[in-house]
Length: 444
Image (cartoon, rainbow, N blue to C red; front, side, top):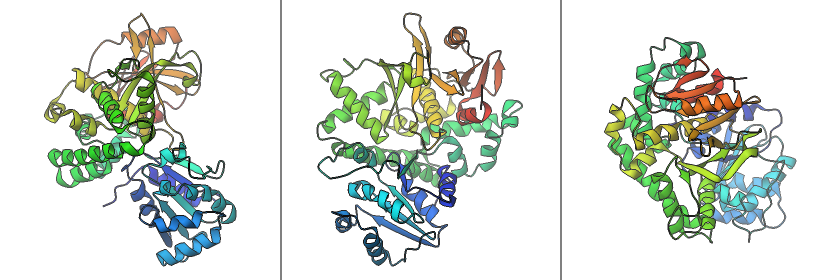
């Protein structure tokens, strides 16, 4: 069963553009890329899916001089579907298995501009990063558009479990600002979502069975599959090192990392290399420290100070063996693991609500020696806005007030279990409504 995804509307817009570039759909393995493209394919009169992992014999079509007419003719034979520009969606799945097919996208764009073509793959980022240097491959700069896809967001999850009205309420600014009668129900489903996570197979399992136990079995399979992929990332970084760093992130999520001594016996160089590879795979998101002195936020990045969060709360809870019953019954998220869980979820929801044509990044701010740290900082227009995550309905806001006084920002945002409210310069947003921040605060 296919569940509606936010990426669907973006793919539909791309389909309807008068002139379009081939798409590369990028994202963590098993986040639903193939399903989304197949769903789009149902809106075309003709759909051809070529899997370059299952059909390696087709790789030779891209060797030597690239002849797009010959390639399309062979695809017609393979699929039994005639290619007609404007009517056919051509999907090259697992395109990373044939890097020259990525190069060929340029020629499809130039020679068959009316053809809709999408490429996707589970480890595509490593080819784009130049891992397979022995293969003659050139990225078609300017001829291809990348679009990023992520696991289910909370609002997508609400649709999957049959709660579209709650999703609508959550995304209607007027109803969010006051008298939000759906708050308790949304908070209840949000806590479910923390446990289920956003991986499509886990969401589907829970939507059909309503069993957290079954969901955790799915998550364990997903974790195992990811770890088995580690030896494919980079020949110079042992899979064991990647496993150690991944587990380090799970056990130290949201804490400042000292790369020089994070893992005993592992050099800072190797640790940073492993983090970069896990980031490329979509399994880990760095939260970079920004000085917030200038824009964009990355221009004031402090490389020595880094926090790391895992890609999925469900995987996080399952891998650490945490008691999910405590999450469901929690009225506060203030202890160590649940507090980190709220911060992780906030960062992930912000990424998932970002522009899908951008590779989203996370930043935080801290002042050394002043015991002041703001969990996230975002840019809205030409203004830097601090976001502080609280696992309880109440609590101090010393750091965010320190930031507001220093930066003279017009307002800050507190993400907590509270309903929508305000404390002078600080707007309170419920944990489940992080994606609404972009809608509520569209300008300075």
